[in-house]
Amino acid sequence: MFALGLCFLFTVIHVQGECSGSCNEPTLFYENLNCKPVFASPDDCCPSHYNCSLIEERANSDAEICYFRGKTYNPGESINDDEIYGNCKVGCTCRKKEPGNMGFTCAVLDCPEWLHQRKPGCYFKYELDKCCNVGEVCEPSNVTCKVDGKTYHVGQEFDPSNIKCTKCICQNEFAGKYEAPFCKKRSCIEEVSYQKEIKNFCAPSYISKDDCCPFSWICPEDKDTIVAAKIQAKTPDLKCKFGQHHLGIGDAFNRTSDNGKGKLSCECIIPPYLTCIQNYDYPTYAPEY
Image (cartoon, rainbow, N blue to C red; front, side, top):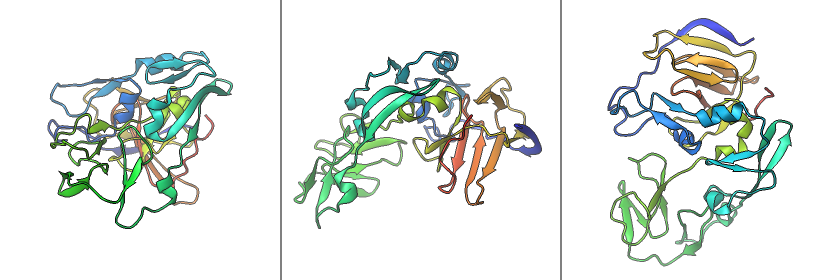
C-alpha cells in the first residue's frame, strides 16, 4: 500500500539569487513538454511550479494519437527526422504499443566515432543539429575558440560552464556569445520513448541534478512510503502528482533495489512532477502500473 511515513524531511527552499541566474533543478524536460513556468516572484531563479494543462488533457483522453512538441501524430505518421536527428534517432513513427498506450518506434543511430578511434593528431568535426561527426580534421585551421580556460578548434563541441544544458560548436567569428549559430539549448525528447509514463505522471529520474534530461522514469509501487516534509510549504496548495497520488512540496520517498546496490530518492520540488535521483545500479525498467 502507498503509505505515509512518520519520519520527516526538510523542504528544499529556493532563495532569490541562489542559483546565479539559472535554476539549479533539472527542468528542461518541462520546457520540451510545452509546460509553462509559473514564478512566485519575478526575481526567482526557479519556477514555483509548471502549468502542464496539456498533459492533464492527455491523461483524461482515450484518443489513440501520439504527441511530440505540441504536435499530434496519428498512427503511421512520423516525426520529421530534422527535429530529432540531433538526439541520435530517426524514423520515429507513431504506433499503438498496447491497448491504451501509444508511442513512437524509432531507429537509433550508431555513429562511426563510437566504434572507431580517430587518427592520431586528428579530431572529429561536428555540427549543431547532427548526432554524428561530419568529418575528421587532421590539419586544424588557425581559428580557435577559448572557453572556460580551454581552447577548441573549428568543429569541436563544448558546453559553457555558466549556461546549463547548452551545446556549442566552435566556428569562425565566434566572439564569446553563446547564441545561434554557434550554440543552442539541448533538448529532451522524452515524448518519443515515454508517452505512457508522462501521461500517467510517473517521475523523471536523473543520475545527477546537473543532468539536462532524465536517465529513466519511475512509476508508483505499492511499497513506496512517503516521508512528509517537516516544514510546511509556503504554498500548501501546490502538489506533485505521482500516478494517482498527490505529494506536497518537500514530501519524498526512497527506494533500494533488491540487491541493495540500487538507490533512488524522489521528492516534490517543482510540481507537477516529482524529481528523482538514482545511481546507475538502480533498475531502469518501469514496473506495470
